[in-house]
Image (cartoon, rainbow, N blue to C red; front, top):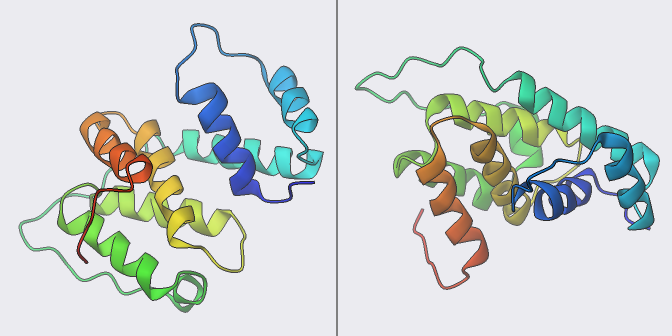
Length: 158
C-alpha cells in the first residue's frame, strides 16, 4: 500500500492534470481511482487538501520584485527537512529565473505542507513543477522545469 501524499499528488498530476483532459472527473471518481491504485483514504484526503491550499494561493499577492535580490535565510524547520542539494537547487532555480521570490515561498510552503520528515531533491522538483503548473503566467518556466524533470540529460549547476 502506498502511504505518501506526494505519491498521490504525482499520480493525480500524471493521470489527470498533465494531459489536461477535456473533462475533469469529480473528486469522488478520482478518489475511487486512487483507492484502486492502492492509496489510503487518509493520504487521498491530505492530497486533496494540499491541492486546495495550492489553489487558494494561486491569486495571492505577489512579492514586489526589486533590482537587489535579498538573501533568503531558511528557518530551522526548513533546513531540517531540506538537504543541502535541495536548498542549492532551489537557489539555482531562483538565480536562473525559473522561480521568483513569490513562487519560491509557495514552493517552500507546499514542501512543508507535505509533512514529510525529509524532502528529497526529486520531491522538490515535483513540487516546483506542480506549483508552476498552477501559477498563471508561468508557462515557459513550467515547460523548462518539465524538461528538466523528465529529461535526465539536462545538467544544471548550483
